[in-house]
Image (cartoon, rainbow, N blue to C red; front, side, top):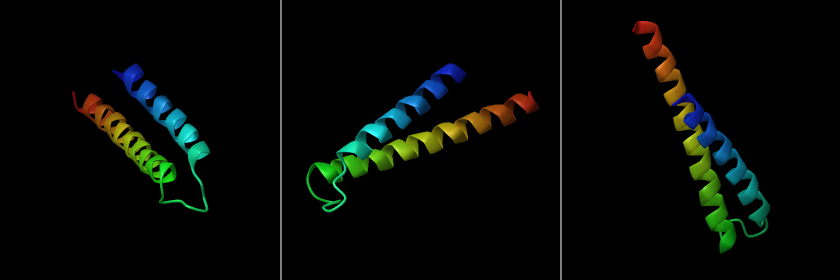
Length: 64
């Protein structure tokens, strides 16, 4: 499970890098740039959720 979590985090970081390259900073919320901004936000959420899952698994491991 730990390998899967780290793989998802790495994939999310790669997706952030790809979508940052698509962003048009002059028209940030229009067209393809808006889709890229939403995908970046979603990837950040995935990283945050995976970090929470890692911490919760570490805490539950200490109690078992």
